[in-house]
Image 1 (spheres, rainbow over the protein chains, first blue to last red):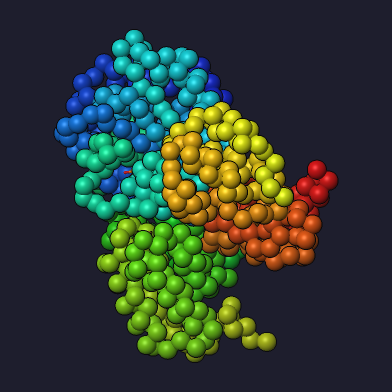
Image 2 (image 1 turned 60 degrees about the vertical axis):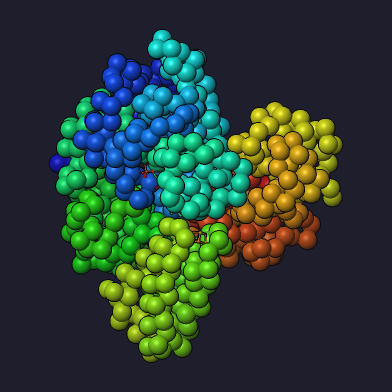
Length: 428
Length: 158
Ligand SMILES: Cc1cc2nc3c(=O)[nH]c(=O)nc-3n(C[C@H](O)[C@H](O)[C@H](O)COP(=O)(O)O)c2cc1C
Ligand code: SF4
Ligand code: FES
């Protein structure tokens, strides 16, 4: 029996993404219509029951976030959709933005209604410029059809969505940096508290959710929070888009019920990753982008859901699942990860700005076969400092992958100290 | 070669794309695309800053913060190779080697005729077709030596 689900992705590839008619013909805007007949608090109750854990990486319960914002005085309130999708290995928001943009628009509109907002912003990474243009077309089409703009569906409520472009900065995916970026400042994170629900965009109460989180909202309103929750399991409701790539036969976005598949299924099943090319062995896999944890073959039978993964020291993060085969050296891989963080560190705080460079220096010693036991200890100390003392999530999570590798594959670090690695020190 | 647009033309582009702060990055990327050497020169930066209400210092801060924006002239065509780990696993190093051989330059350099600049970029969200390069804003994936040569020839003859 197929383990793939098709709810969030049911329209992908089946409709003209810029056609309201197509969207409506496959159930589009039913959620918004229903929402407009409901009390805002009743919608939040459904969101709470759905237990939708934010799909942008931090897995914060969306219902809880909505309730907090609802209880905050102040207007206007702003709705912001995070379409920065910067975690390497992640390409699932792209599928929604490109192939079913109106599901994101509908989710943002329902949020707008709940909070009485008149303006929503969607921040789409600069690399998706062609998608930005198409998304703007979709917004215009929705306005023409009365689902957006003035007096939406005769309700007397006005709501517009503005598309804002990024310009190549991973840290702008951090929600406060993202708001700074919209305000035409450099995209460096803000200090919290105050939380964005209190002091957000233009210093007003603001909701920031991920693209996929917003696309889930119409589903929740339509089927009810309970039914949505039951698509998942164990306090982790709904379905999830997983970006599977790296050394697998099928590099795809899969949709699965949370907790209804294992990591093994995702990597090996024909309908998902389809196994590793050329019959090679799995060496490790990297979850949730560069800031996420690394897992190993002995963890493959873990169900893909927050609680079970947490027990293994793993997490879903952005939903990336990057598969690496036997030819990849762990040290080499970690150097790549580290280079990414050096490039993307915004430079605001020392632990991250300098720490990543030092991690790189020490890892390079391992690669060159000149590292000692003291270097391994230093690496762990650095990691602790960066994790606890960095200003934002970027620096705090930069050593997650490193920590997993030291914990589970210390032997590979020790082998490098002795100059043993088929990749770094070839025999001939 | 300086930006060939007049002040009026630059400001017209700013207006066309909604002259306000939230459109700033979009406008700057657009102006950079239109500039023959793919960068934002000082005159353009100052004009835009004044129009949207930023100081020159704030504008410089922004131009040097965002990786896609450049303050130094580059080649007519920009070829960027993704060097994030998923593409690395899909043998992005081979792509770099082919580009370097084909164009006779290293990553980070511009060909002497000013036609091509090759640089690295982080993951741009097309890992399902890695290794990828981005050329003039468009992403090309599943690259083979033949395909890379075809892309370069296409640009040479454009
Ligand atoms: C360095 C950094 C980068 C991030 N990048 C993204 C991103 O590209 N997209 C995203 O949705 N969330 C990203 N986040 C998480 C956001 O800060 C925020 O938690 C999220 O947008 C909230 O939406 P959600 O609750 O629906 O997931 C990032 C966080 C950090 C610290
Ligand atoms: S941890 Fe510090 S330097 Fe790193 S991105 Fe965050 S604020 Fe910037
Ligand atoms: S890693 Fe190259 S496009 Fe994602």
